Length: 410
Image 1 (cartoon, rainbow, N blue to C red):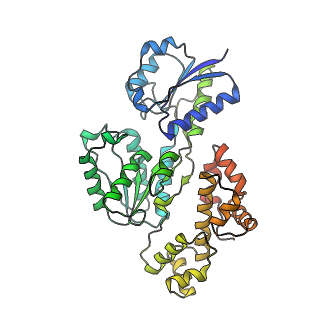
Image 2 (cartoon, helix red, strand yellow):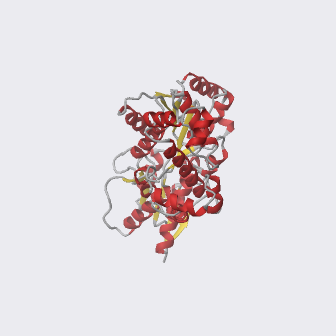
Image 3 (cartoon, helix red, strand yellow):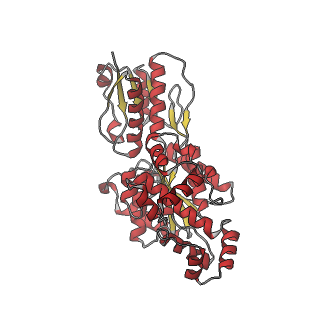
């Protein structure tokens, strides 16, 4: 008889949907579970019905408890359960599986520093443990490189404020955000706690005529494609590798149901990739000619440009331009053109269904064969296999990191 598994996980956002997908994948591979869940937001689980919990005759529960009371309520049922949210240990209650928030924040700091930024900020509208962890680790990563970080002041009255709808987005709070953004030193790299909060940052920047990414480079978390592809400019975001979180949560629950030995501490799942989009697409440099060169490369990456085209566009001698690239970025113009092309190619492979031939043309390669050779030399895999791995593998974030890329050998 199949086990009855209850999922108390929000499906209104990409984070929760990814977890459900991971749980479903585990169930399909083992064919032993009947899964029950409701299509809802996290606020639907603020209160639980004890009778419903017991009447369901559940064999196991996977839950993202929005508060400690819910976590304690489920714990008291003695039904085997896996907790994915409660961000602090209280007695026997602690998160069983979660994305490694330390590595998430380190990824954020590393990506924004790669944009050659020297000023940084963090934005969240809630004063909760999960947000504070991200902020603390982000600031710690920056401090190790000697960079300060400006924190958006969350008022106590807003401690539990979740701006999930326009109705709850009051003008007073929006104006406070706009004034804070205006006062930030420019250019600045802004790490936002979640994609849903980044929506309001982008809107505030539009109202205040703050240019993204030229003045503020915006990076957030969750990589919710519905949000990241819809907003303007398209939003760079860190993929939490939630399918892997869901899969490991299901595997752990299975062990608990079978009364097998289980870890007595949180299982931290490494995050996936930084999905780089337009909101962090510019590199901040003080050298005027170098900034113009980078902008030219960005705007003409779909054309078969070379070093000579870039030098002519910014009216600088080729050798002078090469020297400035090497001194400031540590890369040659040729390597920078290749880097831009490969980043755009990865994004198109991940987020579109365009044939590889079309992608090759959009990144400046008239010959698809040449594009294949270059891509394989940089990433040690073909474009088609890369696309398949992104869709079906939960470990892609660790397989294709910056350390595995080889830009200077092409």
